[in-house]
Length: 368
Image (cartoon, rainbow, N blue to C red; front, side, top):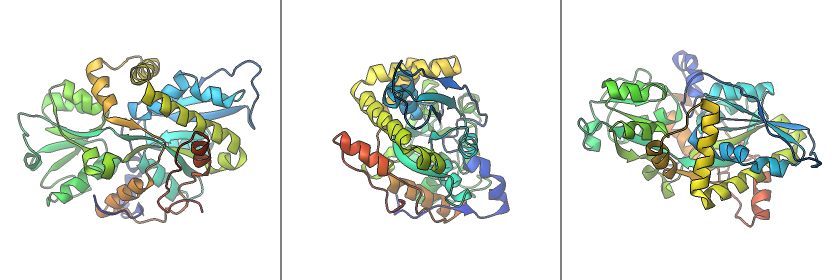
């Protein structure tokens, strides 16, 4: 991976038209849902500076900190008498819109929608206040058609959406191989086929694609259909870590209710610690939450390998977000913006210090 530089405003009218997909970092579908799930505060517990905090996240394993934290009551324990209203989303644009509209206060989201939401508002609507997950992205291929990395040339490989985080990563990898692909059309030495993750397994089974560069659990679903992991994206990054999920907050809510934001961050840090200390229980809790949200739990041959490839952590891995931004610029999808101020890690560092953990780095993109 090359050294990091900041990300972007859109360069051409074609890319402007594609803004909704550029916002969809995780690429798990275009529809949004709002289940309005509320947690009950403990009787007699002291309220913080507001009665309720509205949080949002995706029903995905890469958002397991939120799934598990809500499911196990770990957030509510830190919030005391302030209740949680939890809403779920299937796409970045709808979650950013909800944050801007005040429908949610705090959200778990991927790097691309966080960056685009920040730049689109001129740096006024959100801050990244913490990390949540790293990894969980793989290149899975049909082993009958692709036996080595060089065999990817000339094949049809799916990514979730034009300009989303995995799409940009794949385009960057293609460039590093010395191959050429037109980013907009996906045509070139490799055919990049933008396919919604919900239908990618069916596209693979039908033979219309030869593989996919996708996040979990889609990658493991493809393996369950006979696919082979040819490359784990984590191997391309220093220390095998790169941001896949951030925690963001409305700047208005952060200013008015820092005690609530701190409590949520404390819940997140304690949830990640619990997840890492109780792997099987945490996996079960996440799958229970997914079943409640979607009506169907993930089978063992999908959730087990998917879970192993995701690292849950508090560090937002700011330097890797900066690098992901550079890759989008290099791909010709985005112009460089000013990302200074996208991070405010003050409260996270306060929580980490209390928990006896090291402070984290904002890669020079903090508010100070």
